[in-house]
Length: 148
Image (cartoon, rainbow, N blue to C red):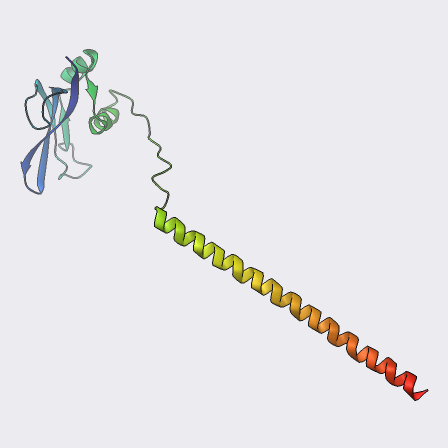
């Protein structure tokens, strides 16, 4: 029989209260359990000592019997120093959605087009300035030749 150490929800609507229980994996979340191991009251402050209470000897017994704790219970056990919880890393969670990525690509394309237009305008201005500088020099040379 596969067992888990998990939370069973109690309390009323909008006022959660959980029991930490050892239960068969096939049993419903709030249904039948083998043994009550402690409580978790998320409404209390994190500094409160009564937020999480558990019978450490019985929890250790169930861990020795092969019970696997859920992620939330594993957090409690890690805080008590009874088990080690590895930090999770989901790099895809931070990525924006498909529409947001499309908007970012459009924005980047517009910025790139604006930079290219600015470079083209600057180059055109330089070319026009160079042509303007050459034209008076040619006219002056033509006038000097005509005057001689």
